[in-house]
Length: 128
Image (cartoon, rainbow, N blue to C red; front, side, top):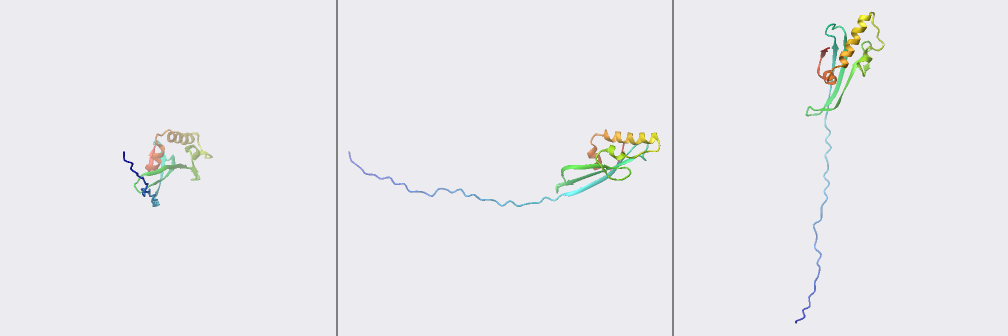
């Protein structure tokens, strides 16, 4: 047998370096449009009994509502913000028992409405 000398050499090859490219994220501030709707609820049989409500919300540029609408009522005498319809008549006293019953009927009917928040944001007035 013939003796052959062989040498094996390792030549380092340049491997593919992974290049980490950090893409700069553009900060795109989305613009929102604020909306407000003030409306009132009234008794169908006695329209002079009415309670005002306000809805506020924001929409993005696509016209989609962002977050939840802020809805509230206004006190019948002071106009101050009330978080429940019953607060609207708090501290108010009518001259007659019948008138007090009408205010209570109005509050009860408003409270029982389905989709109250949507009504406040969409309507100008609403008969109950």
